[in-house]
Image (cartoon, rainbow, N blue to C red; front, side):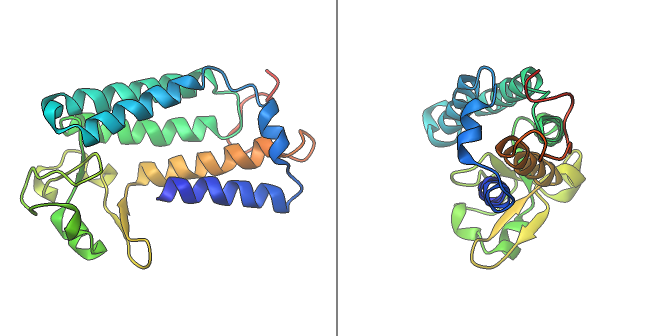
Length: 193
């Protein structure tokens, strides 16, 4: 949810400040098909129950592909920040067996108990790459899904998700504006490089 909000907010801010959607078509984003491959691997891992033993491997592989894609496009606006967020999420996921840990207390506080059959240690969250682990059993707990958002769109997310969302926002903001308009946040070199 936070990533969808970052895309929408980045596009809206860019448009309000003189950006153009047509500029997105001129962004030299290389090997974008890899993003669809990575997302496809995550969808298979989340929704195909017959290969649950493979899910952690598929999640880890998808993160590796996304980090590679960010590296290839590292000179674009926001990409170094996207890479940092992805790196933090990958680190905590790999450290916890290939799943993103979340506590049952966080799930309960967010009002998301309907997304799991049970709130026991090791239970998977339906439609997500999360697994319920208590704080005491979570490696790198501070990087796991610990931030609870209540309200109309309840969710639980990580520090890595916030950084990733900021990078995505800066990508759209930086690439939709003319070169002489765009600030240099999270950018190495120019878009044309």
